[in-house]
Image (cartoon, rainbow, N blue to C red; front, top):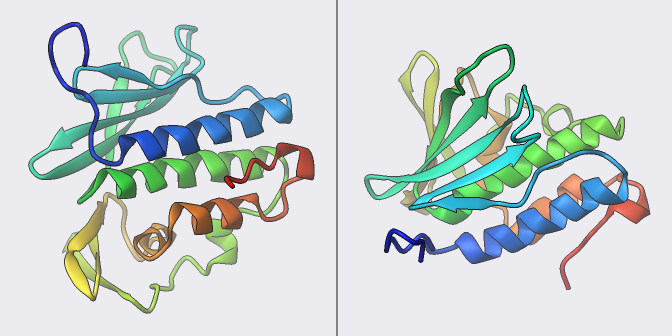
Length: 189
């Protein structure tokens, strides 16, 4: 609970925070500035990098309707943070995997390892996933076996993040860690 009496622990947030902290350690092992400690503000979870310095950025996860919205936050060349909605997720775990995907991809690029986005043929859907165009730059990806498990991505075309619907955290970690130097790999037992 926060000081304002709001219970900020969303179902699935504890596992996500453990995974997120593991990725923070992987950045540190490579002497690369990376994500900072997660911060709850009521029901919103802030995941920042470089805060409070000029040009800080990050993500915010917040409940919306019966799911969670993930937005990017940036103060680059601005006095007030710019908040850009990236997607909507039916579960906190899916929102968490989306953030792990983003920070893991960032670490891979910083370590000069090919992005999974390039290796996964970005224009390919996972066989268990259906894509439904909602607008020009908005697509819903749903698990065919259970359409209540879905993500809505704010980008055009088929996005590689559709694979997150079928991956566990362990599978995502292994995929993102593949090729990273051993000293930066932080697998879970």
